[in-house]
Image (cartoon, rainbow, N blue to C red):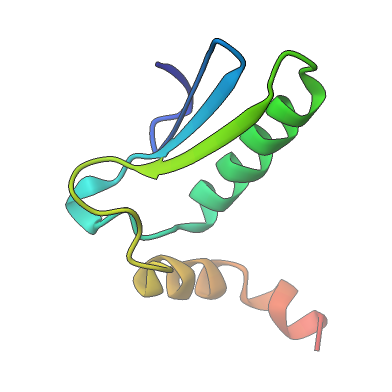
Length: 87
């Protein structure tokens, strides 16, 4: 698998793009970095005329548990000034 980021893996074979959420220890809960990886992977596949469809999957036994609340909180704390300025 090609890796755009260790948490979001991409692969292309026979016209099928594959995006794998790769945080099985956290039930593939989304982090802000994973969301960026998903956007980049989607844009890459969208620009490739050879891609006929894209499969989104989760590594391990779970697809995705939703958003990583701890990760979003950390991001909000780190970017507090930007969040407050946007209000």
